[in-house]
Length: 532
Ligand code: HEM
Image (tube, rainbow, N blue to C red; front, side):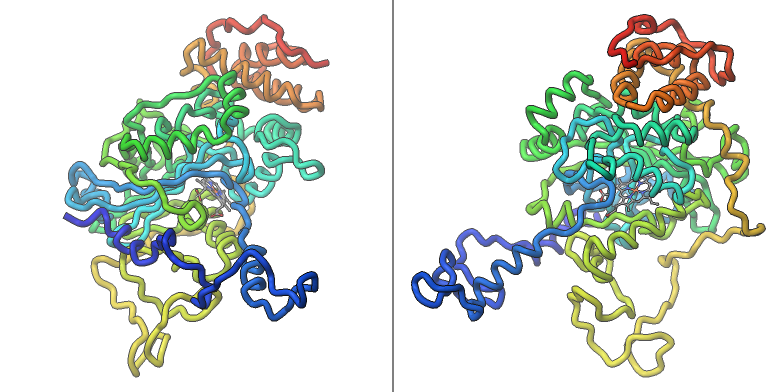
């Protein structure tokens, strides 16, 4: 059996236990005294000569790196993944998904999205669910969320979206993503956000525990088999403990009592040997069915309903070890959607294509230059052999006199190419250069309505309460009105119920409503925090 501990064996070489060692400088020189600086006379100035003082303070001055531009706050853990059997081998050559004898080590980082590194855990927000599989064929990163859909369809909108979600620039208020004017202004002007906003206002946005959260790859990806045939795929993580949420009242109290509630829960469970588990499942769509749906598979604001394409189980992930050092492991890990292995490939989803640019770009600055893949937590267990050289933070001593191909002298790393290599999926691309969203991406209301109609009455009540709380904080009346008008396209009763709670006139009704009318809401007529 392939060793699920391969990553830990690699990391053991750099783990440092300094509990019973004597203090030295970075150069290994022992120091007898670190409480007073070297001074000219008992009350005199500190001397430049004091190399120990300068090294100590200089290092401290440089201890911080930029937090992630989004998903800044997180918690991570090590674990492993193992497929149940080999059925997926028909569709992909990715060994870690198809060989039941392979146990692949991995690291998962859960996160909130909008808040800064020090923000509270139990806020209403999307949760990141990013997994780095250290496979024998190289690192594969599944960089997902706990919602199956995303706010925008094209990554070029991501900076706009994040600027609207993050605290407002003049006063850096609020840390909470969904309780301010800029967020709702953007939502009201960009109806493609509505489906994910429905999830955001639901109990899915306030998970009880990271251990009790689903995860989704979101995009439609592509599996590729030994014959080079592609199959569309959506990835799903399902927690063995089931999906559980807090209620809003609990969230607010917990945020005050224990801002680390979700982090602590994950840490404590693993320390206690209560190892959380998830089942990985896939929805597969044959390429011949690419256009069989009433939405576009490339549109990340859409789910593939499970009634249409069931989720089929592939294997199990267990998280069984906490990190030793938050910064070295959880903070320095670098996930990237473009980290793929043979057998997994991309689609033309414009959100995914943008992500494939953005992660490496941001990590070049966040992690200090082009060698961050050599940081221990990011190192593959697969052998790394490139002609890349030098750069800030270089950790390897490359031997030999050449670092290029083709090469007739010696060394270099020729690309030989055997069955294990990554070959980009071959597909025909043909079209005019055009800056325009596809017509197949224009239905923004059917799936929000589908989501709303799938909710139980009490879940609908929670959604209405959430809209009232979050949207009710918006000072600009026209923004509140525009959101209500948008909700009227999702469900009239929903729009009326929200309007009643936020001091705007309920819509007259009869506007284009893509969904069935929903059962009467218990909250529909109970006017709560009214805002003029
Ligand atoms: C970070 C998920 C869309 C840019 C993250 C993280 C997750 C995530 C889970 C945190 C990774 C970690 O724990 O370190 C998603 C999902 C998306 C999405 C599921 C949509 C389906 C985008 C888009 C962009 C983007 C469209 C840019 C065009 C970033 C950046 C980071 C990040 C720059 C910070 C990465 C770092 O500093 O290491 N995203 N994201 N994301 N995301 Fe996304």
